[in-house]
Length: 629
Image (tube, rainbow, N blue to C red; front, side):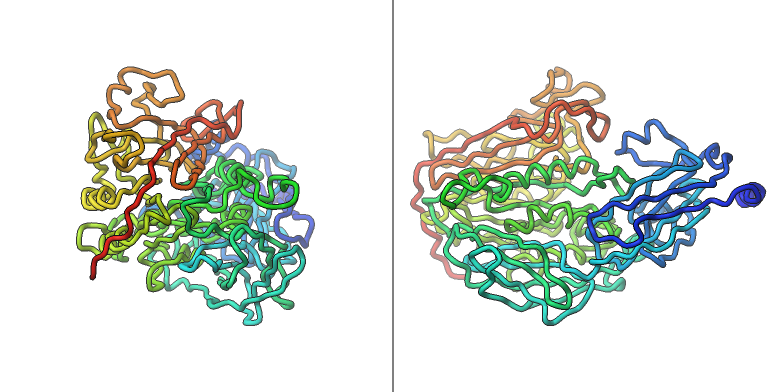
């Protein structure tokens, strides 16, 4: 009552206005939003609920009244009030959550918004006062039309079970049965095409709960997947476009045909987890990840096309040809528009190399939805948006099971689904057992197994002192570890804990020493959950024990002896596998500077190699187990 009375009393003097320009744009462009005529009293108003802990600005602003949001045109912006029952949800509490929003600090001026490549035909802007719990709408702009809304976007590649095939996926706001992928081995010359095997979308009814079913919902685009097959020989460059004459065509992308399984080639991989996405203009949105874009930008520089091609063509000798994203992808958690921003941000990676994903808790978990963890971490998505966007080569096509394997170069890759049981006798344990037993180590001498929740982590919230398996994130870890040991898995990649860590060769919380150099000892575990969401410090209070800071003895006394290297900074990793001889994992830091609570500021160095570790092996002879099921 008071708020509205104050507004109407002031309203006689000035009418706030909001003007957006230009009035028609393409995706990936800037929109200037001018505001004027805001009563002085609105700047004074305190709104204690302004919360955005990963934005440095929050520390300075505190209680903020005025803000501008960007919305799909025509969206219902009615007030719904705070919803404490919606576990993964955040303000502003409107019937439609803004695509993003920016604080306003003056009675007149302008602010800029970056429009990601998205599928809404038009957007509009609204000015609010009274903060984000009970916002009062003061003005709305005219609609800004998005000229390329239906154009094919967000190209993403994935391996299939067939080494001479690449699955090409993309999104468009229109359903078009004439859409296709066209490809060839010379730029601009597309000699082959393939129609999509799948054109799908999903409805609000398939979401499991709020905010995915409520103010986070916006209509998703159509998802297309087509199979480029048969590919030219490994190492050849394939140029491709997706779309149709009516939908429009994407820009040309290219990829290198994946290495065939072989113990004689070198393979380079980019590996990362727990990323999210960043708004280029520093706008607010659900669960901000201001450093995520550093991770994906620096990781993309490891792929070809960002290098100058060497003379006479052929592959750059430090080019990665595979990306692993081990769970916690966009952190959309029910806010559909975050998927557009995320897919836009990873396209320099996903359009150039297979982008192989795991489902994490923020993709999959929801009570009574089939996940073995009963939290509400997916914000009601329960895996559906992820599986629609990232079809993986799961056995029998059951995307919800989420586990799969594939081979590339000298490596057999296994992806777990840590959100489902892997206890002995479970479907996943049976898959792991059969899959690992069937690996031909003469052809793929290395096995890398990945999954989101970690089997081992020395992060203080998981472990104090000489702890063993991280049973909070899977009581089945001893059952899985028995398989890793029996089938001589070399490296395990995990996420979920937001830092980076490397262990010794490890069994049951104890380091294992090989009888002689080059002989198998035990799996080494790497946590790579430092992709951008927030940081989990190796600290108790201000006493820290990461490997890149001065050690504090009180904290260092709590670190188990199996933890050999730790870093609580944002970054990504690369893995280089040289035939059957050596596997090297490299940890890069996005930014070295000041750690600011959950995030960073004042970067002094970027994209810096912080640690490398090499596993060397003598040639292995073991062929697959001969057993019958």
